[in-house]
Length: 65
Image 1: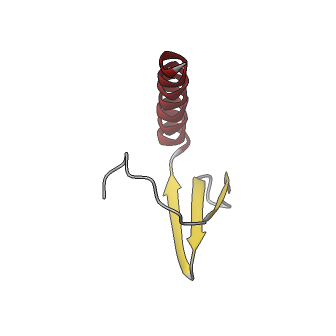
Image 2: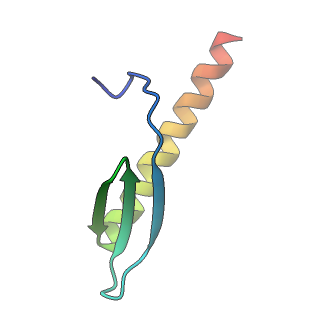
Image 3: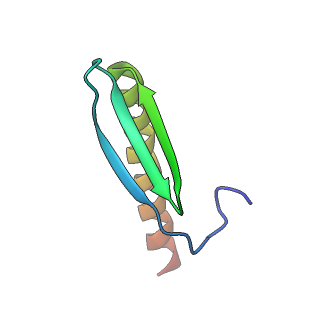
């Protein structure tokens, strides 16, 4: 399975600050919990990557029309 493989899996995603000054991305699905803590600088980089991927996806959608 790769990043381009679609799957029918439901998951809950939560993002917020921790009491230690980190940013937590928390994923829960089918009884599995994955807490991932990042420094604020790393979280900014992740946000930039998500924004870039969203822009690429938007452009792909426009090309298919």
